[in-house]
Image 1: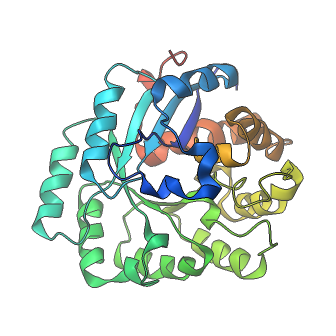
Image 2 (image 1 turned 135 degrees about the vertical axis):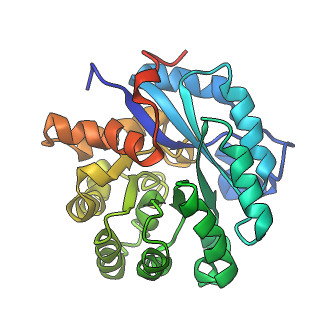
Length: 291
């Protein structure tokens, strides 16, 4: 891995007072109730040898993507932005996609599906029409699901056979409570579709924040690797959300432990190639280091 880029395919930024950060006022989130910007991330990237990253949205606000793409102009390590688009906006959805695609930094779209009151939101007809726009223009979609939403993956693939999708945070099983059988079966079913990928991310905040160990995550990671194979799994730190349960460095170390015994090519897939392939990143332009 020393001679190839280590890519963090999932992290965030936010600035208190910019956009809607009221969700951070929950007392349980006090550890991350502050501003996190690119210069805050760089020391962690350098410490872990991460050379390139992909930002993923936190807001249902188109301006967030524009804000991050502007910051990325002077941060060559920030190579991709997954933004938000109103998928139910009809013709305006296509207009927005075409606008964002003018920037090579725009690599995907995400909606915070698991916060929708309607568990079937993702398969509403007007949302499917928006996803068809993404499919038309070869823009992938991040699936922010809980285990109960995984049942929709088959329908999405049937309606959108060419849309690349990635399941964020292995669909957030409750590791702290030992959720297992239903999540495992539905994740394996989702993995049966070759256009669906998975992120090895977000698990530490589904475990016991104060006492988790990499071994607590192992059977969940092993299930994902068994289902998707290393070629369809990509590493993501979920920073700064991960700070609720552990530092950036500790999350990277846990991922390294979870891939012990992998071949060099398998580790290269998880920590580089899968993200490049899924988000269509320009491998030739990845920086030598984060600066």
